[in-house]
Length: 241
Image 1 (cartoon, rainbow, N blue to C red):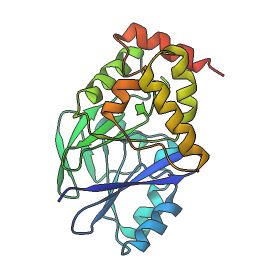
Image 2 (image 1 turned 180 degrees about the horizontal axis):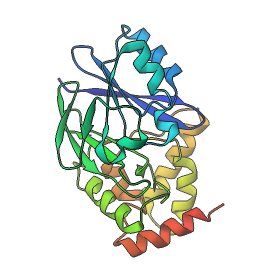
Image 3 (image 1 turned 90 degrees about the vertical axis):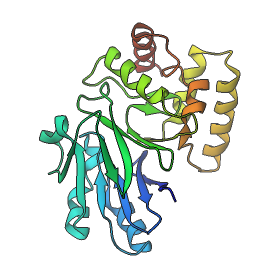
Image 4 (image 1 turned 135 degrees about the vertical axis):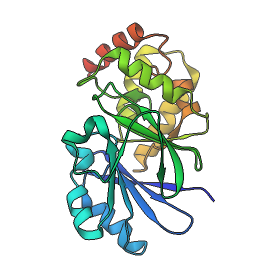
């Protein structure tokens, strides 16, 4: 049986992702806050084997010290980002295959939002842990990287199987939809997704995970034809109110 994934809301609009193996072992991705993770882990038996990190921003790693102290969990992260991550037990690099709870996980280069950012594709479960690279109807702000780097990172994600669950770092979909409609106002898939998102948020429900196929149909960043187009869209989004 495959890994399963559950989003745990934390902070103001973050998600940390709880992964469960068929034998009950647990891992967590990008714990920006320890409290919701501890609550979930205690409810599931009180053991957390692994903490997986995509990048160094505090809202993705701040919960790590408390979780390591409480559970003795191993910590996995990218070699290129290791100097600004919590101490790593498992160091990974893009292009390699690692293991998450016994399931093979492909490490993908995911520069753009930051340099040294990685994503993890777990085929057995159809999951990609993509941090702040790809969002539902959006992409990460270019804080350290370039539009060309982000374009390359998004192309790697776009090539994943269409049913892959996109487990991203934030609940940004509703605001992303408002902007996306200014880029592709005639996109029927986007209009339908925007309506769905409004309904979900009105009920206090999450809009993620999404899927690669949904994003290919409606996300203007993933649909950008080249890095220059992506740069133009990203600049417009940065100034969108």
